[in-house]
Image 1: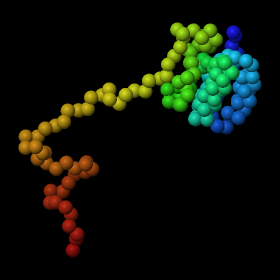
Image 2 (image 1 turned 60 degrees about the vertical axis):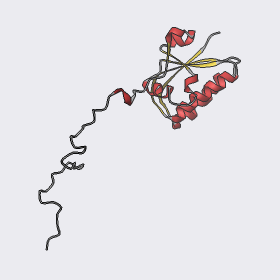
Image 3 (image 1 turned 120 degrees about the horizontal axis):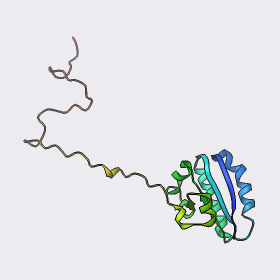
Image 4 (image 1 turned 90 degrees about the horizontal axis):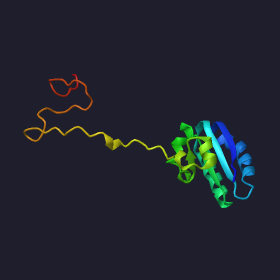
Length: 152
């Protein structure tokens, strides 16, 4: 079965979703709709935009079809592994791969770098169990006379 390809560009945010939603709903009227969204030119996507993609994918599944994303831009890729429901939407590297549902063209969610990759510096040990000098967390020089006393 052939797929309908729709290219989105610009902002996929709360202010623009209202104009895109009726167009997508019209494409989902057919039985077993196959919809490919070319999202390579989407520059910004907020939670409302990601929610729209999830709801369109759900509506397509309910009618026996599916939604596929083609060539997701960085704005869309950032939502693939984060937004609830986005993991259920197939994302492909190219429009052609999405149209053919080529498994070799599938891309997964962008992995977030783990903070644990860098080893912490080794703890310093002191011969008597504690440092000899007090540590000044502010980094400012301390007076040798001790704390300042009020002037008389």
